[in-house]
Length: 265
Image (cartoon, rainbow, N blue to C red; front, side, top):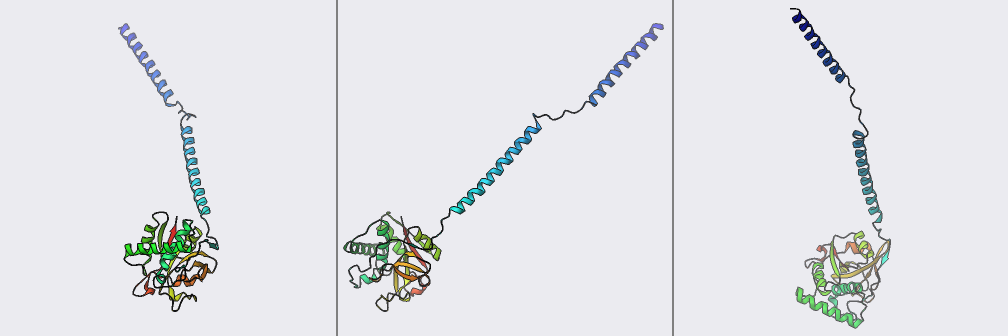
């Protein structure tokens, strides 16, 4: 019996030691301090995020600077400007017959177009240009008399064969016209001819008229008014041109829309 008792005591002692060891290890694991973040994990992530934010900020600042530069580089329209366009009237030799009385559209386009091409023909050569343009109008439009801005544009584009271009501006403002002229682009304007007050016209003046706006100053448009031999650099008040700008309308010229034809290279 004694040996059984000793064995029991021994077993209890062993179990006690095991229990104490387990308790000690558990307590040590529980109280072990948490690892402090090192410089190799979270701080690195934070620095990267900062770099991204800095790059994004730089990008936004660059966009702002670029936009400001674009605004600064928009050219201002000068207060006055003049294109040195040689003058040719619609009757180069002063022959105001029924044909030449109708040549204001053709002559205005040729004044502008030949200037853009750098050509300065003689009167005889210009007369031949007029007749060639007239012939093309008759072929393309059926007639050369009193054609609309759109019709004149069509013939102009064919006549110059891509050497120069043209565009129509509907309801142009003063700034639109001045900007085109200052960019080197002559502006051909259709008008109610009897309302613009040119004293050089044979009374009562043309119902429908075209001329070239080649310059401007604070108060005036400077034109090549092909409807008179005295039309070189002829000035009109800006409000006179703007008020009486009308495309061709067979019913009533005053019903014609406000638009211009711009020629450019």
